[in-house]
Length: 152
Image 1 (cartoon, rainbow, N blue to C red):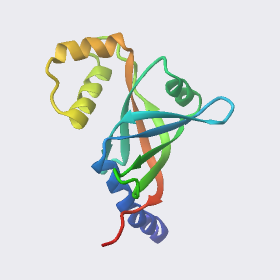
Image 2 (cartoon, rainbow, N blue to C red):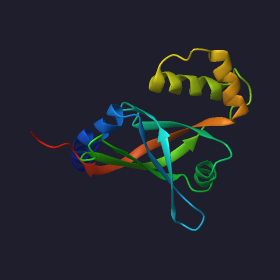
Image 3 (cartoon, rainbow, N blue to C red):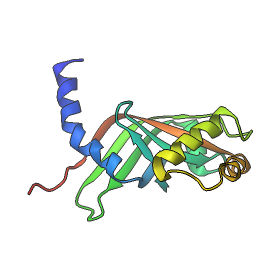
Image 4 (cartoon, rainbow, N blue to C red):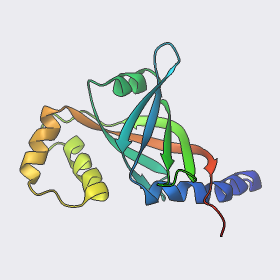
């Protein structure tokens, strides 16, 4: 890691912290014509891996956009809207859930637990993930910018 890389990581740290403090944001993907497509979603951010995870469905525009062009941005803001972060990166998509016990469903369960805790009926949840044709988007954060919190 170069000194420049280290400086960038240090500057991004307060911005990325917001990803752990809120669990909802706006996923931005690129339409075929290059215009942005925005989706309100819930997420979990793993600061060690620098990965934002989001549960998405196979038939939605954001999924089609990411398959065509995996570049994406993710915007989060504090409740007072003063602090905000945009995380940019390249998305990876898991396999689509096709069986209640396949790896995609297991990853979706881990994501649910990280965002919401325990589900009241995991069998129902597993069946819903297959019926909805859900998968996990993993956005590897390559760069972040924004407005850090106000100083006291």
